[in-house]
Image (cartoon, rainbow, N blue to C red; front, side, top):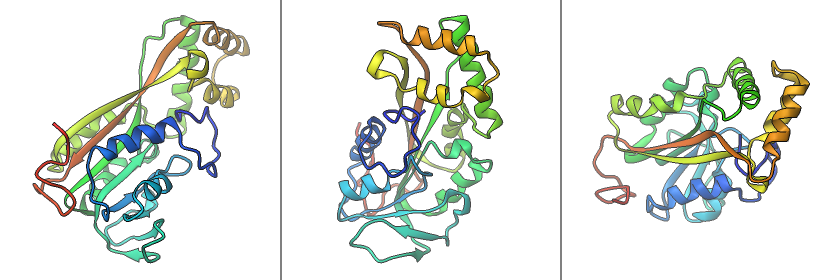
Length: 251
């Protein structure tokens, strides 16, 4: 689920979402230099490049397709003060969210991104982590069916848990973990039901199950957390870089 988008796939929307606020808040804490080189490899509609360009107008913000990522790949420049498409650039921050969990070669993409960072550069990955043990059997059945549907379509809803150990093997340091709960129910706080509704005809449950789960999630005061977004932020093995001091992270 995409917080604040309620299952929408409207990639043309420029309105900031709670997910944008969450991601930008974590990036702000890195204290990047104004002219940092930033690369977003997120797939639409969850990319952050436009929001980064707006927040850091002097930075050089680029995008690249995670499926063809390589140290010499062509990148598209978002920042108006930078030239067009270039090759072989190295970056102070590489960001991805809600993308690599759906990529078959996700670990290889992370390893490739490592080679595209400047010394001291930061990798920031955000992906969902699915939780078990729903508070009601009917709801649990629907959420399990949604999970199975996601897996059938190539998503790995627990992969992000393996990322810290992967980054350790790739000689990253200062590995940090941040979390954002994703809510089902809670009235205006709901961030999940729209996705269930849009996929209901592909879930291995009955219409009655969907109806009962929806009734429960709409009950006044009812709230569940079926998923959390985990963000892993890590700096590569070089101690410092042109955009950071001795530590990229607040203590």
